[in-house]
Image 1 (cartoon, rainbow, N blue to C red):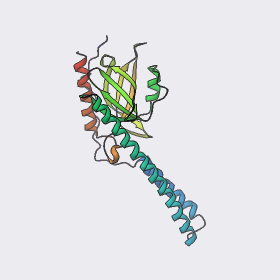
Image 2 (tube, rainbow, N blue to C red):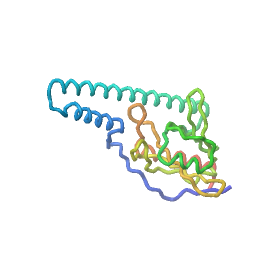
Image 3 (cartoon, one colour):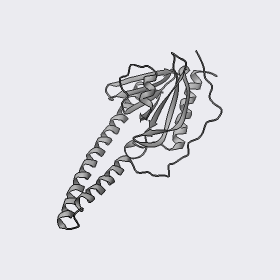
Image 4 (cartoon, rainbow, N blue to C red):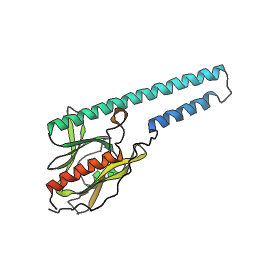
Amino acid sequence: MQRWRDESARPRLGDDSGAAAPTPLFLAYLAALVLSALAAFRGGVDSRSTADFLLLAAIVTGTVLVLFAGLMIWSTRARQRAAALAAARPGALVLRGTRARGLSRAVRALRTEVPFVPIGLTLLADDSGIEVWSGSAEHPVRLGRAPWDAVADIRVTRVTRWGRSTGGITVSVLDGEDAGLVELPFAVLGSGLGGLSVPTGAHLEGLVDALRARRADAVPA
């Protein structure tokens, strides 16, 4: 088995907990309102155009509320899956996450039998290795597993989630067939409304330190 040593230094991700950025859903909502206003008032401002705008705005707002409710349900189900896995594997570190850009390509590079990588994911780390789960809370599905001696590095990185650059975790895994490294990027969730926001940089660093400690205990230097 090939064993890996932690690098003595790694870049720290700045804590951006004080910064706020509009979500894609909110930006889409604003864009839809602007388009509705342009369409309603293209012939001038009068009582009829105002009524048309209010009707369009109501339709847009209703659609966004339905989408937001769907996200809240999805977040709740993801929390339930994480809780079920934590209960089934006492002592394991369980993280909620989503697919980041590049993850599907990386999974294919590992030549796994997973036909596709879903958006919602749960990372689980115990004494034997790191695993990725999906599915429902009642019937979770393990998408893949890497023993600790195949994990080269775990670090905080910038990943792309839903078209936005944000903080995440990248796991570098040794590909057993050609001894190459495959980087698996994950966006970690758990803060903000509905737990849909990424934790602060300091929190992500703490999670990575916990994962690296697990690996160090399992694979001595």
